[in-house]
Length: 569
Image 1: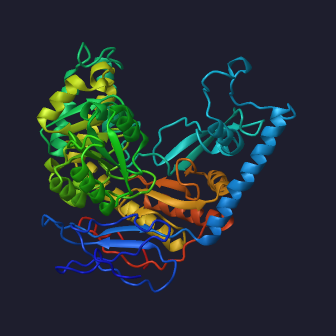
Image 2 (image 1 turned 60 degrees about the horizontal axis):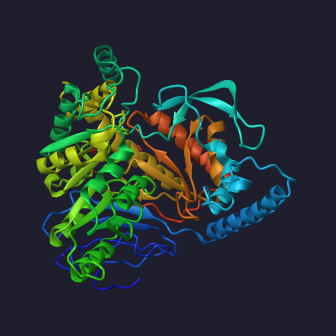
Image 3 (image 1 turned 30 degrees about the vertical axis):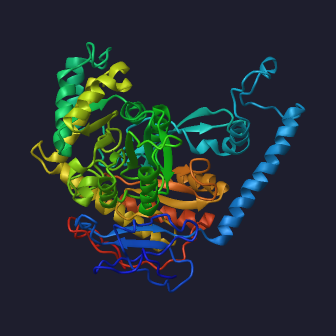
């Protein structure tokens, strides 16, 4: 490895970075904000293991080491993955040939003969992929639950007489399946305890539905209390709530940005952010994931060149990022992002769907995790779906912003109000996290989640699996690569009473299929140890231990001193 001007040490700021062989600029630092020193890797094929502990352009240091790992895809699995998709494609065309001549029955929806000349309703390749690849392993998704998605869950067993085209329930219930797939980060998705009791009580008083919008007859006193609580929880002036997390992004971004505005979007942003950006009519430019060099380059070009053809200045530049990226397990580089947006006079839209409640010593998201001022983020978005065990989302920020959205957001004007028991679930769980219920249950769960995430992630790495993301993230992607191994891993895990989520193309790059584990504070050490033991067993069976890295001990955090007490380095 060589030193470039952006990686030479300066002003005593030193950090260690090893580039990812597949994506060499995956986590680039802005040249003007950070300078770090690249050390030569002793062994070829070492992972990208990045530790940042430097001072930003505005003198605000990272409050903790920032460690993310992206090990290079081994050559052999990459080759076999491409071969697998090639073989599946060849056989897919063969099966389509048989279906065309009525030799094999086709069960998937298609164009009617009399509508062949119309605008097509179905995209050919998407249909091809669905009927020839996805259908074969469809039994690994959409499994019906019949209980609370807590640390364990009950699943209804399904059988398929026609290779996953249709399913029938066998009547058997798989009980006490360890749940490693739900976003129940703090364990508030439960049917007993203070949250459940409060929701039941409020249901008896207000009922289940409101049957109106907030601007008509659907504005309850509990809605206003929730919004005041959210603003106090986040440390901002005001907040407003919405009944659906997806719509919070897709319906509010068009209200904030329009024609003549520029949206700078991370390449791995969630579909709700992508849809909202497209609906806004703004010009969209995409920067490399968490790459400050790529973002700064786009910002400079936007300032220098302005709008295409007219060269007029952009009306508004909005940077759109997430707190935790749900497929990568990575955490946004918020200190650098804020420094860039201040330098170039842009606005910052932060989606904390996965990070709120799950990060920071007080559970207040990625801003709390880095110890930053919430006022530096112009638009703070989050959902109640995950850490709070409820539904819906929020937008928070300055009072003027919220008052504007109340009258201009389609989600606020036309959507039905949040259900009262759902509102009460959020209020009770949020007060528990803040300690306003008179207990330390919420604080204890935040700390336990941090310990569980590091413990689980580092043990998987020690076993030889390739793990992506930040070591503090409760989202833990484990690389599977080949499409057949998605099904094999998920089915073998379920046989051993553990439920997992597999993710493949097109949700991920074609050679980066993975299993995504979501860790919860409600997982005990015994549950995690059992899950780790089974994952290791199945990993040996399916041959998933691709890693060639040597695990290095990491620095323990100030708020979780005992996080490595059960890990033998």
